[in-house]
Image (tube, rainbow, N blue to C red; front, side, top):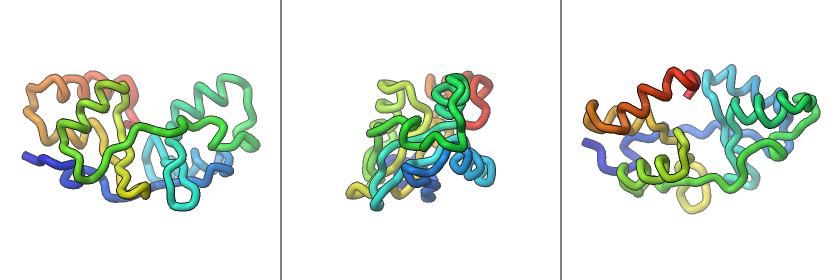
Length: 143
């Protein structure tokens, strides 16, 4: 069983600039077949933008996704984990903050992403975490 975030995380960073348009971010999500991207500037994480953020914070408000910046819609100062944090610490953070994915940051620099699915695979399939993952998978299929 994995003990540390680095053992279960996806060691890739898909990021956009804060001044990118929502259309650019959505096209990147589509190309990478993912539901969220990190917002980075100067090698540091500024925020996280999800497909749901684009839908609820921009499109539903009637904003123009060609002119609205990622920075104005993303969740700033996201909850993050370190590669050397334990899997149980990551689980506790996800539960406490009601999030399904956490950026993995080392010395201020994003190095990957860990999802509830990544963690559920390494837990007991009958655990509450696996139940949450299965239940929420139908709710938000891109995560």
